[in-house]
Length: 321
Image (cartoon, rainbow, N blue to C red):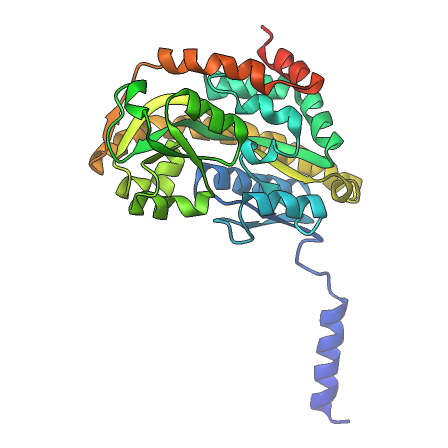
């Protein structure tokens, strides 16, 4: 055997015996928001914190923009264990974790900090609800305060009469916009830009961050600040998959989730006012309709939506002074 071959074999043996530099645990996490949107930034922060807490032994591999499927596919992949972790709108997750329908109710929290305070104070109850449906709740991010994007300006609730408004595929959202006089049209987020562009829908409800991130102002140049929903974006795993992780990784992941959520919710607050101002530079007509009629029309939904003891208990806890 030549000296060159012996040298090569020795180098390969040394390489095989050296420590593996890649993370021991890599968790794939998927969501449908654009890379760089506030939800994605929360996951980037969680990744940074998890790596720091585990000295690089665990990390997140983030798939943004619906690369691994729409929101329903994301939730179901997490349920099946074919996806390690998912972040979706609460509106989708509450179809599976029924207690979370509380968070789909309009005008429930006056601000993102107020929502965050209630979530953190009732974390154990929320985690138990998720566990009961086979999920592990890792974090609750904010998807912002949701408003209205339309082709024509909305100055009052009357202007919504008969308008086709895209909503999430969630029964409470559909009923809310029916109560506001609109013709609610549920559809996937990935279909929305084309639907607005072609006139399939006249408008949609959504947060300023999404309006900016997906450039919806190009096809819906009016933005009405109604603040009808304070939307959360829960981050979940399959409970069995979470339990199978080493204990130190589980601890680090939950700590990273909690800290990233605190950071992310404040980040969303900091983005809101500058984004609304930036819309005007894009030629967007920004209006501020009176919200009192919207709030009044929303009240019957509270009784209709809260049908189980779990939902009522969580609602009571979240709205207690």
